[in-house]
Image (cartoon, rainbow, N blue to C red; front, top):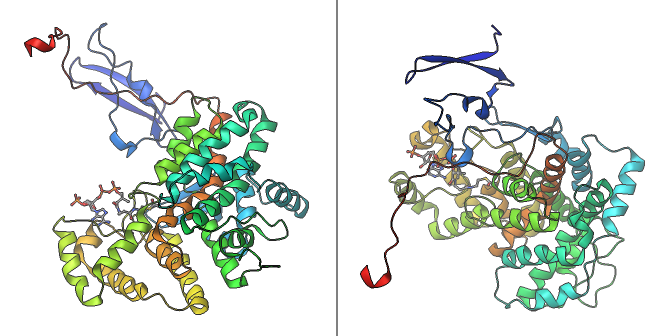
Length: 429
Ligand code: ACO
């Protein structure tokens, strides 16, 4: 009898089964053999919201939520955030290794020369109302890219996957900036290939129409790059799961990325920093914090930016973001929300309710405060998240496409509704 196995006794029948254990997991399909009789479908596992189910093997991002560890391809996030750039990080996530100087310069070149979007995209963005949520514009416009790049459907062709990867990573900031300027009533600014990835993004956002040789402050450029690095991947989160699930039916990656963006839009995921700002605004003053905490503990709302499905310790990204926040404030002036956030964090970290539930600040607690200090309206926050997460989505999508164990994602259900009813005509109801 192998040691790495689970012995299961079905008390309904008295039968025993051996289920192999590998990598600390058992395969749900191994339970199907457990049946009461021949008509029985077999035992299923029930796991709403996938709280204890691994849906894939992945070599991209490692998280130890209890210890607060995050690694990209084995490199601690702290080192990546300190030494790398977003584009180098994207390469690492996608290809598994840090690039050589030649690989990096080719990679940067390929991304840089795909930042332009089709001219019709402008009309597309113009078609949205001026007060549309930019995340809605992003979801719609990314999906529309599939209508321009029909070769995106060739998901089994490595060369096509590579090209769509460049396009997606390169065009997300352009679309995001178009959406931003649309909401401001400003004419769009085309990408500037002489600038770095983050500097070009700043240029497309903030360059004056007649301004020549725009260059953002290096502190700002680096802060945006660090924020992008921190948001680049986070293993099987809600939006990545959407990317993989939608991608599993083999549509082009633009459609799958639109689905991932839509998942990111929600307030429990990428919309959380928007909610943090609304919450801080609602609290308004340090003196109102105790009362606010009391209401959270009474179940009358959540402390947004706190808690995480995986981290049961301080989110390592939150620590780095907090440091970046101070650098940005030195440049643009202190955001008054920071004092409320710091006090809120202090009180929550000492409170038994949060301690016992292992609720710590997550990446969103401070990111919104930085974005607001940079002048972004809260609606742009999830968009700023989607730009760098595209690297992670595409890396995970490519891993899924080439994984021979993967099939179309299709969970089972426990049916709890009626059966075999007779149709009743409307006149008799
Ligand atoms: N404030 C107050 N209580 C909370 C919070 C919070 N932010 N988060 C969880 N709790 C409580 C729950 O009420 C629950 O308490 P109970 O056991 O007494 O019922 C307990 O902690 C466990 O909470 P769950 O909802 O089961 O935890 P889950 O893992 O499902 O949720 C989530 C994780 C969605 C992130 C949650 O903590 C949350 O809503 N946080 C606020 C939103 C947020 O900041 N989201 C960003 C996540 S990071 C990201 O997406 C990039």
